[in-house]
Image 1 (tube, rainbow, N blue to C red):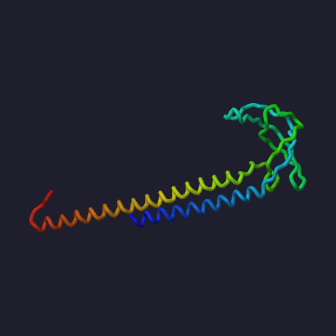
Image 2: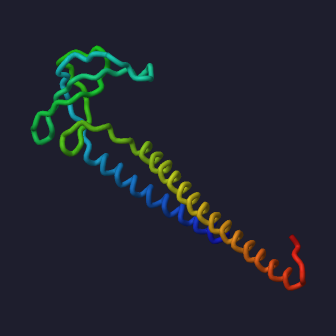
Image 3: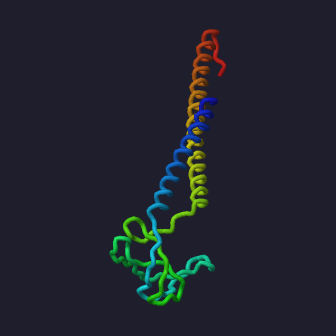
Length: 163
């Protein structure tokens, strides 16, 4: 059991650290490749379905923007309700000039890394500990079967049965 605890703690910490490093690299890559772009609203924004948060009501509208290489793109983006055609808004684009979510700030990214790394550490450690418990239960059952067989032999040798 001691070995399973040790492996659970060390394995969990290692898995959590590796995951946090991988998430940090991915978030750094997103921050490096995503750019702000000025887009023009192509059609009036129609507020058909507000989001759940009252303070974050947004509507979908067709927008048009130019990618860094000069090509024009069109897509739908969230804008304040009632935004008129021709209004300028800021959108975020990925390395190919397509719409993308705004990258996380460094503080939000660090929090995200810690949460994901911690969850992976917890789940990995729990899985290793659970496997160790299963092994211990199997060994205990095997030991009880062996004792039962031994008692069966000893009891028969003395001329009787205890059960």
